[in-house]
Structures are given as structure tokens and as C-alpha cells.
Length: 81
Image (cartoon, rainbow, N blue to C red; front, side):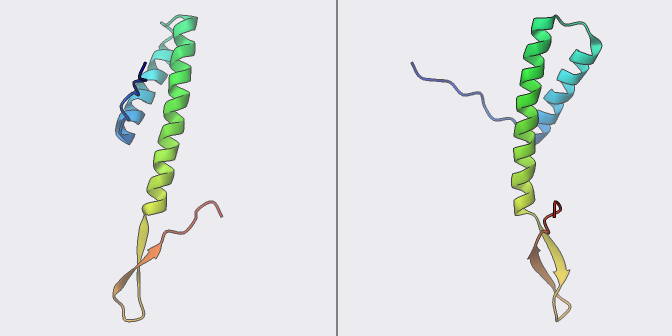
């Protein structure tokens, strides 16, 4: 039996869905079982969003002036250091 994989959400879609989940959990109108399912989904989405951000961070470059005053591409500094 082939496994069907959910389509990957864009970063913006991930954030939007996380927001929906937070609102549903904050509203208190969902059962315990549904709350646990939403919490699990939210946790997975947060992990995916973090991975998306990490990948984006790795591709970001900053422009700086070279010796001749023209912009040159340089790797983005590691902010965690």
C-alpha cells in the first residue's frame, strides 16, 4: 500500500496554521483529545518552520563594500556565536 505524504506547506502557511492552532487551544472550546492532536500538529509545524528558517538563513548573504567601494557578497554571519 503506497504511503501518501501531505503536501509541504510554505513557511507562511505553516505560520498561519500555527496561529489557527494557538487560537483554537486558547479558546478552550476543543476536547482534550482534539487539544492533544492540535498540540502535536502544532509541534510538528513549529519544527518544520524552524527548519525552513535555518535553510533560509544558510542561503542569506549580506552585501558589504569591497576595497573598491563596490558591493561584494559575503556569507551571512552566524548569529548564534
